[in-house]
Image 1: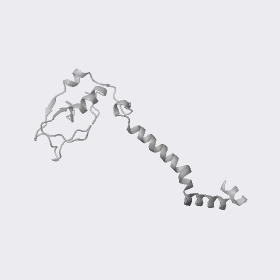
Image 2 (image 1 turned 90 degrees about the horizontal axis):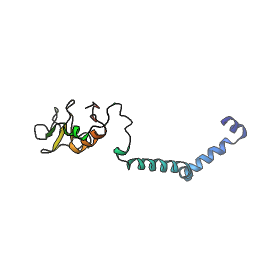
Image 3 (image 1 turned 90 degrees about the vertical axis):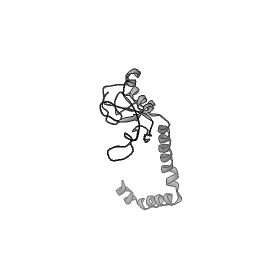
Image 4 (image 1 turned 30 degrees about the vertical axis):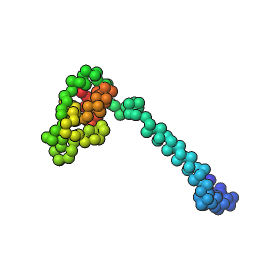
Length: 139
């Protein structure tokens, strides 16, 4: 196509038109602006949906959510100064809400993998998934 434009002598005019539209902002207003607005609006729509409303595309396990009484049987522990830090000396945090555990809080420690989570965070997860959110090991 560029060869045909060169033969017809139109290529310099098209180049000038692109340069003028860039300088005047017309290209941004007419082409880039609507595309950016559409992308921002679609991202804003996604952020308004909670994780409960979105199907889990990455759930490869055959295990679905657990019954409430089974979730209640998973051990609870009370956070204290002895179990509040990991091997490196860093504060342990809930991997669901990313908040550090505070002394006196009650957490759930999953039996097979020993990952710890706040009760409301992990209970809601287990009712839907039945696996550890960190390592995806079935319970």
